[in-house]
Image (tube, rainbow, N blue to C red; front, top):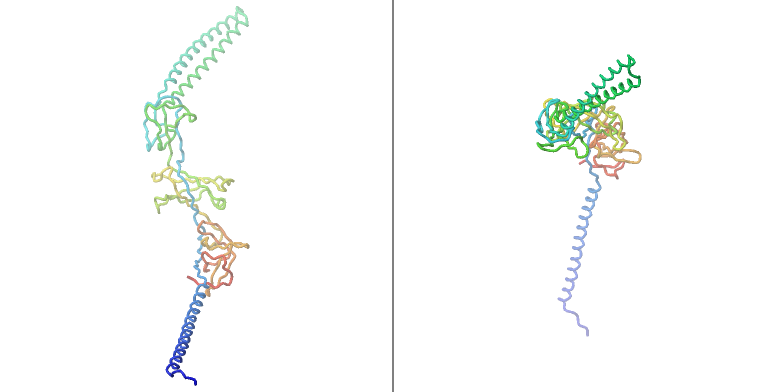
Length: 380
């Protein structure tokens, strides 16, 4: 005889099964909804990251050219380092740094006792030679008279005349030596070689100085003529043919922003240095008010002209491809076009484009190497 389970137990089992099934259904719905949201977010993120954002710039007209800025150092139109011409001691100096001097004005005085002694000896030797020459002259004249009377032989007369010629030569040598030492003694007074400003003084009273500028010779003064000033710049080969004698240039000092001085190109080397591929250019800068200082570092703006109507773009818009330099432009719909361009003068941060661009084109800055024709981009 079988026994049936109690009715409450069966109902409890059914309830549990229904609860499990319901929980599974709710979990499935939650998972489905969550995955739907995740899929939408992933699609939106993928679409967002698939967009290429770019920044564009419009070309600018060159206006006939841009100045080329080069560094330079101002120098006096004349600069001289003054050395001693004789050995001795500094007795006194009369001009210090910053002093304006005129040509021939005394700078310092040197005591040279050796030269003075040599000059005294040379004067005495000259007097001796003059006395010997006078005696030889009178002797030769007397023997000439005697020869006319046939009182002496021709040989005797020739000997006396030869002695006279030797005495003349000795006198000339003594006079030359005396003149040399007098000239050397005159160098005891150190004078300015031209009008200018003393830029350095390297001596003091009592200093021993040596003649010349070699060996142990020491410079006494440095003098510079500061009106006008000159400076040299080295123009790269690509610009060399655009620099002409007489062109006006602008000179500025980094510490005086906004203040400019005018100068002109005085001469060019008319040759390219094969080591640096630059051409040396000399510039003259008037300095009537001493506003500029010799030795100062300056920046020089040279006018570099462009042929035709060139457009200027930043150098970071260029794409270098096997078929030449190209730029990426964007139309109103955001579609990219790669255009081949012909480049002109490179100004450093900008470059001139002679062909391939229009002034209203929107050019992509810093284009990616993967950018291709037909790509759709979004403007920032």
